[in-house]
Structure formats: C-alpha cells, structure tokens
Length: 248
Length: 222
Image 1: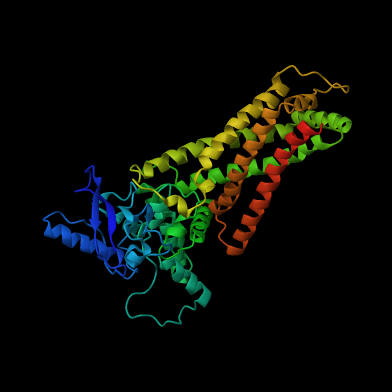
Image 2: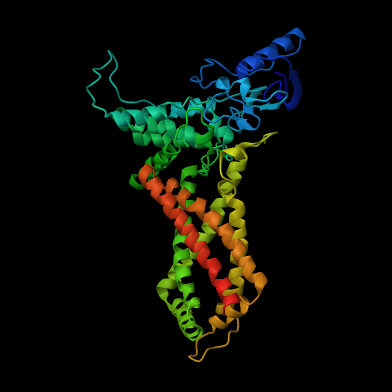
C-alpha cells in the first residue's frame, strides 16, 4: 500500500517546529505503525536527511514508551491500543496520516515526536514508599488479600504511563494516571499505611507539574491502551476529600 | 500557575458543592412555579401569596444569600479552572480529532454555562429586579401582583422561545454537571455511580422539561 504522511518536525526543545510532508510507497499492510516509521527513517538515512525521532521500547504494548497523536487521536484510531500495536491495515491505501507529538505544557517536546514525560516519574516519586520488611521475600499468605481486591489493584497497576490520558484530555489533566497509581496501592493492605501522605503528595506533585483539572469527560478511559477505569479518578477524589475532612 | 495555594481537586470540590446547591435550588424553584399551572383565579392568588411569603421569610433570605454566593462562586471557580486548563496546554494540536473520544456537552460546560448566565441575567432583570425594586400593581389582597407580570412577559412568543432554548442548554449542563459533581466528591462505587447517572438523567429531563413547559403553557393556554 501507499501512504501520505504529515509529520511534526522539531529539532530541539524550544524550536518552533513544523509539519513536513512525506510519502511511502509499497509498504506492507501487515507492518506495525512503528515499522512504517522505521521504513521512512531508512529512506531518510539513504537521502542523508535527519531521521524522525520517536520513543519506543518493547513494541509489545506493555512498556508505555511509544505514543504519538495519529490522525488527531492519541495512539491512533483504535481504542485501547498502543501506537506499537497499531498496524497499517487500519489505514486505507493512499490515506493521509497526520502524526504529532503528545501536547501538554508538562510534556515539553524534546525532538520531533519525542516528549519529556518525566513529570509522571516525579508524581510516582512523590508517592514515596510502602512499609514492607526488606530481606527475603515474605511468605505470600502472611497478609491475606481477597482475589477481587487483588484484581482491582492489578487493574489500576496495569497503567503503563504512556501519557495518552493527558494527550487526549481537553485540559491536559493527569488525573487518570495519578489516580491509577494511587488506587493501585490504596487498595492493598501494604499501601494503606502511608495512604494519606501518598495521596496528598501525589496530588500536590500533579498540580505542581502544571497539569489541568479533571472535567470528567471520560475521554482518557477511551484513549487509554489499558482501559484504566475513570472510577479510579473518583477513588482518588474520595481519598483526597477524606484527607481534607479528617485533617487536624 | 504551578505552586498555587489551592489544589486542583479542591477547586473542583467548590464547583461540585456550589453546583449541587444550585441543582437543589432548581427543584424548589420548579415546585413553586408549578402553581402557575393552576386554574387562573387560584393561580393568581396563590402565586402572589407564595412570592410574598418567600420575600418576607428570614430563612429564605439567608438561603437566597447562599444562592447568590453559590452562583458567583461557581462562576469564579469556573474562570480560575478554565484559565489553569488553558495554561496546561499552551500549544494546540495541528490536527485534532479528539472529539471522537467524549461527548460534546462534557467538553463545552463553559459555553453552556455562559448561555445559562446570560439567561439568568435576563431572567433576574425581568422578574426579580422588578419584584424587588420596580413598580408593580397590587392584587385584590394587597400583595404585589407578580402573577400578572409573569403572564405579560410570557405573552411574547420570542421570549418563550428564548426560555425553551436556554432550558436545552441547562439540560446538557445538568446532564454532565450533576454526575460530574458526584464523581468529584468521590463517588467511586460502580453500582451507585450507575444510580447517580440514571438519577442525573431523570433529574435533568424533569427540571428542564418542567421549566420549558411552564412558559409554553402560559403562552398558548392562558
């Protein structure tokens, strides 16, 4: 198949950047989206042009590294799919595909399609530690955890931190990411001990990074590759409000 | 905007609390207005009596101050939140199809809210202001004749249409606002979230259909 491309090119942070047109001929519809970009980069190398930079790592949809706006939607037209798990068969022959980096003030563009998502790392860091003994792995049944609770905590922990929730949100809010990380630990007995401080610190860090407010449009759940539930946002609000009511 | 004193979640709480109070007020307001649907004679006496009781009551006066504070608070927080949100993404997308991922009215609460605010100003000018500060004739019991004013205002078809259009804006605002407030306050249990969503639907339909029906009824029947 043949495709036409419009890709955001930006040399470095602070550079103005612009959309540049490319075209690719005779590519396989079985290629993944990133393989298509690899093919384009091969051709750019042969022409002695600067390659298009984009983040990627596992290419299995579990690391959260890849993520670009494809035709105006994070990770492209399919719901609950990472960019690397998107294939060219999703697109039509001769289709124009527009590729842009995720946009948020807290996610500055470093180069082309690569954005700095370290704001997410700092939110995680602000969460601090959980109280467990170091040393040998403890006996698994020391702390009984019911299967539904373990499953809910795991559903939240499935967040890969790709940033699609921020990219799709009209307010560039990081509520889904932060709440997934809060929910994941607050559901488990090990995480309950520092729950109050964790919620406070992570919410503060989220705000300090310059993310917007959550308007409950629920676009984040639709765009999320892991289909993280917006109910985690409700749980974050609950934990935060509980803290406000009970604080001394 | 970073390092601000108030957290984003706290601001949303104020939006939710003031919004829910306004939701509660709409119920009371609609119940009072239903008296306009009574037969002419009874409606005339009872509506004017009702208006006098409300304006003379100290509890109602306190509630009205809370009401005005809620409206102003809701607007101020909406502005602060919108400005912060605009700052959170200072470069727009060149090609944007994110609208496919959410409902239009959830993304346009500010626009809907502005329509409601304009409506509110017109509404207050034509009823509240005239009742409080204007020259109204008195009815046979010596009470200010608000009923006659209502009938007169609703005799204008354009005015009635304006009301109906604004109630549609209010409907969508409530449809998202009511459920969104519950989520902001922390309702996360899936079963009750479903209930609140359903209740929000019924509430929004009943309130807005009720408010739209009254001017239509007065215009075409009375």
